[in-house]
Length: 123
Image (cartoon, rainbow, N blue to C red):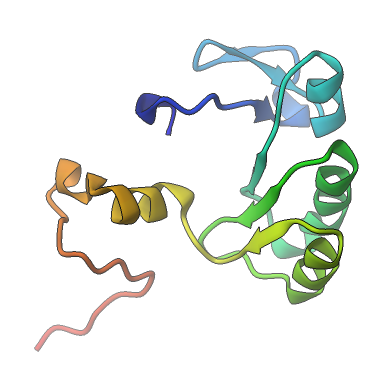
């Protein structure tokens, strides 16, 4: 997504203070906001049971979207997040969805127009 021009704000307590992809890593969403970063989409790569405090922080910082990556589902968080006014997406890869909508799947030879998250049976 960074290669597509998106500004990625890295948040990971384990790597806080380090540089990854040429960007500072923050310990929390709140720390990133306090440092002057703007966050619209919170894209979560954590286990479903770890999502509730991240969702709460996303609401508190004024994010517009909470996105749970492929394989991550938490319907309770989704309900609370949408009640707070955020758009909620779960069990989807933001890179794959971006490519599907903006025609980027061809970059890796997958321009089939269909994106699935499960393995197809061979016939």
